[in-house]
Picture 1 (spheres, rainbow, N blue to C red):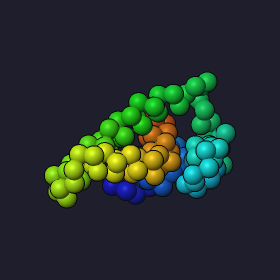
Picture 2 (cartoon, rainbow, N blue to C red):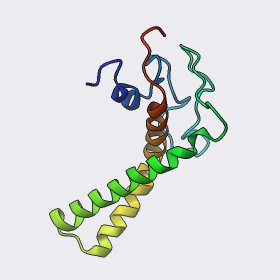
Picture 3 (cartoon, rainbow, N blue to C red):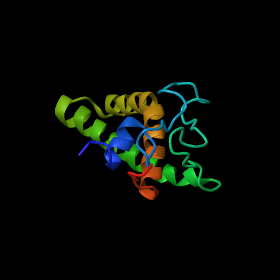
Length: 124
């Protein structure tokens, strides 16, 4: 399921969606705003153009929104129901964790978005 050739492999390893060998992002996870979502122009291995058309990754905002909402609901349920924090403390926890996880969310949404449109190709 997580082996080479699956979409999950490309998503969790941040690899090119077509060859699963080239790196998708230029830099590792960082809090530097200029480096968070900086991509290679093309895959270093198979030369897939990542920015297929102008503004291609605007659609990733919808993926990011879905991830963020799911994260907020999960944090609230854990904080309020399981741990028993007050509503105010639960919302403070949501804000803190969402700020800390923003770089990961942004990267994850972009790699998921491109994996929707590009499939693995053994030839590359």
